[in-house]
Image (cartoon, rainbow, N blue to C red; front, side):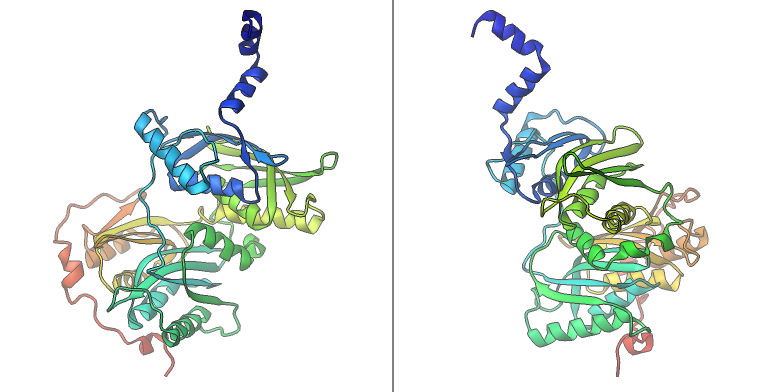
Length: 434
């Protein structure tokens, strides 16, 4: 290559981009590959500030500008190398991506657990009732996540047998668990739609929760429960007829996992993103996608256009209308979730979202709660009463404007071993039929 040619190639942005592609060739395209990439970045707890998506033809090449959770660029070469290995492990060695942050230490679903999936109508005390039934059936909740949106609820739970510490495999017992949980989820209105699944297997919890909510059609009820979403997301869908694309534009307040939520929803609706861009460097996030259905057509009717808009709005809102954040960290034991949620219920709090995990012998749980009026501004006296009952050092309040951290006044063991949790008959709660 002569000097003149070499110089002109570096002076051209197009030629530079071609050089980058030669060094990092695009990977084979397939339906759902964008979601796989975004899911890996989410698991790595990376924040996507900008993204450029291109996957026309048989290849895709996506560029993600990311930071760590503190908004800092990752500079450590050893961390970057570890991320590349993790991405290759998850997506295949043929995939080529820019380096990302180190592997997150999260909860890995395991076939050692029994997987329980629940969907139905939300109501106050529902998580408390479900947890009480599982405790009565000698099931220990190891990991769980619960979402509520538009008066609907979905839960994915991993449980094990209390005595053996293993997954429950007895078919009759599994059938009994399913029957009891279905009964609880229906509540007093036996005509309400519910779905209960009890299986062995592995799942990506957040992906599955989006699927359950979509299958439950929570988006159709979205106008009834939008008072807590401020500001509301702006979503539009228009057809670009010359190119047979539908163009989706999203503008909303930025937050963690927003990109995952929108891409997950489009994928579950069987749409393929061929081109797109994401910009979330400011307080607002802007996303634009050029999509087609897997059959090759753009959005083909006004009814389908409205459905896409509503589904994306619902996906954005599921993590927004949460409530006051409470964090619990203590030694794990059977019945812990049942006891904690019962105390919330007895003090008039409703759990709008929950993340339950077990790390070794420690339970690390996060609850988002609202009071009986649906407000996240829970009365301070109520919060202090709950903390006194559970333990000042066990339960922490996050984000309450008037809450001041109280000094620990008792040992955390009070919560674990005292006679605080008096036995309660599930018959008296109306959870089990005679």
